Length: 149
Image 1: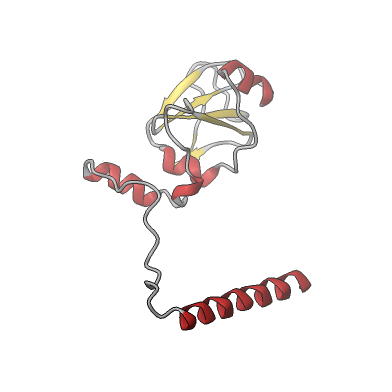
Image 2: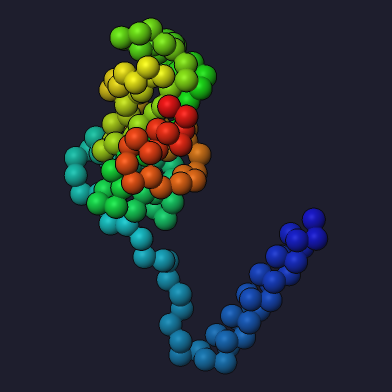
């Protein structure tokens, strides 16, 4: 409670200082809307639909594909897609997945190590479902080891 009151008070002080600065220097240009930090999409409508589904602000998205090959997370509960519990086609496992997000595709990896592309999931779904990244791994094997697979 006290932290919130202090933050509000500090914000008001900063706003007041800004007003005073603008009154002292009326020739300063007024602030405009901030420039977007990422370029606007220039590809087809399907990629713009995926961009609209991705709720993350640009500064929280993955920096670039050159810096990272993909992301991974554990998904221990059964994965339900379109009302159907997803099972591994090779061994029938339906829980304890590792989900891999690579180039707008989501791959499922079961406990036995079978990997399957899931075409009904995309990077926007992965971003909505996953939490913040807590660690960077140089290889896939090190990431799987960290996640317990």
